[in-house]
Amino acid sequence: MRIRLLYFATFRDVAGRDFEERQVTGGARVSDLWRELTGEMPGLLRTGSMPPAAVNRQYTGPETVLAEGDEVAFLPPVAGG
Amino acid sequence: MRIRLLYFATFRDVAGRDFEERQVTGGARVSDLWRELTGEMPGLLRTGSMPPAAVNRQYTGPETVLAEGDEVAFLPPVAGG
Amino acid sequence: MIARLPVHLTDSPIDAAALLAAARPSDGGVCSFFGVVRNHHLGRATARIGYEAYAPMAEAEIDRILQGLASEWPDAQVVVRHRVGLLEVGDVAVAIVACAPHRSEAFEACRAAIDRIKTTVPIWKREFHPDGTSEWVDPTAGLPRERAMTDL
Amino acid sequence: MIARLPVHLTDSPIDAAALLAAARPSDGGVCSFFGVVRNHHLGRATARIGYEAYAPMAEAEIDRILQGLASEWPDAQVVVRHRVGLLEVGDVAVAIVACAPHRSEAFEACRAAIDRIKTTVPIWKREFHPDGTSEWVDPTAGLPRERAMTDL
Image (cartoon, rainbow over all chains, first blue to last red; front, side, top):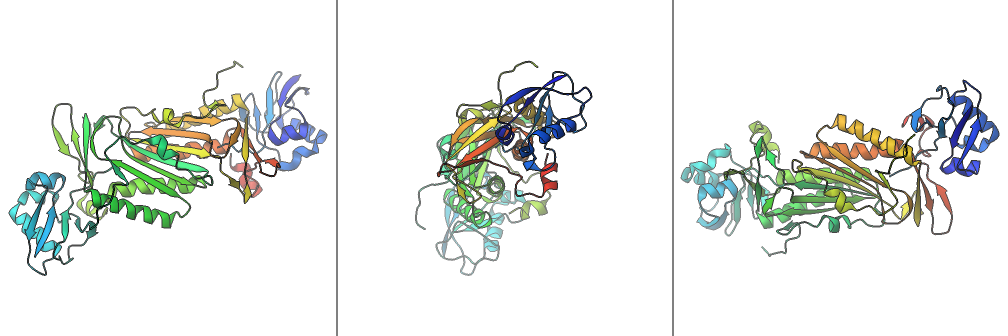
């Protein structure tokens, strides 16, 4: 199934792109996706453990199971204000 | 000796004037002046015990000894802001 | 006593935007408080409020409060304006603007400023109701006598 | 997902005076906070800051924060504006205005708003120095890892 993955700030610098459509296996969790991404792009590991993640524009935990069409983002440390 | 006495808000309403020049005996304290005033104008006692007093535009205690030319005011409960 | 020009008190409308421009280039946080004449008080409707000050003492007392804030929050810069005269509902009666490099100092200095101004600055307000009655407001009226007298 | 117009985010200068006019006739206190681009950060000079947002999520997250404030301080009304894009020193990056009948609620709701916005709203800033270098700001960089991850 396909998801849409967004990159922001330092993660965009590492990935070299704003977003991508990505194929993930059915039943994959947020934490599985993070492991896959850091395998491809070790530069994402700058922040240490898994950063906060959002699925469909809401914060979610690492155990959340992904679904077809989800919009997913891992969020570098926020710095608004 | 003479002092200048100012009245504000409820105290002005009771006294019926903004200020007065007043003769006080040498060595008189702020508390003596208050006792004298409330003797003349019991309406000042609305606030109960002696209200905060200012001599020469600074808060001061009841024991302060008055001096010639002092500007004195007893202050009803303040309500700025 | 030497006469001085009013600095903190004014009988003209307070220009909030001008006060907010007080931030220095090193300031990252600006906390402000505006006390506004509201349309009710203790369950009764308010039409207007008349503010009266013991002006020279009020100026001196606000100076003293600002000196205290400067020693407690040395990085903060605080500006105060207080209206005197007759105000309508919605008018700004008091404005405090506190600027600081970080937001904590700005918030703390601003809050302390308004709390202290309300407690010790010799300003009084007379509340006018729509029915034509009016009276001086006594913020200590509901407090136990001990509290009222030590609030200074 | 349905596209929505930006409400809390803006790429235009924030009009502080317009926001302050949000007070209702029943409000006696207006507390505001303006986060301003300052000329230094962690000992280095700052020339400009670029703000980037995950815009639809940032809008939703600010909505969520406002809902939380409304339940904790039911008498307060809070408005938020956050800039995105390239800002100069002195520009307002974020503005919060909290109105309430009494000042305590206004101060508390305003402070909670900015604290929560800084902690959870997906906005990032890139700091540009006068020497031409730049980097993304990581407010958690100085914190122990545990703290950083639980700050959410």
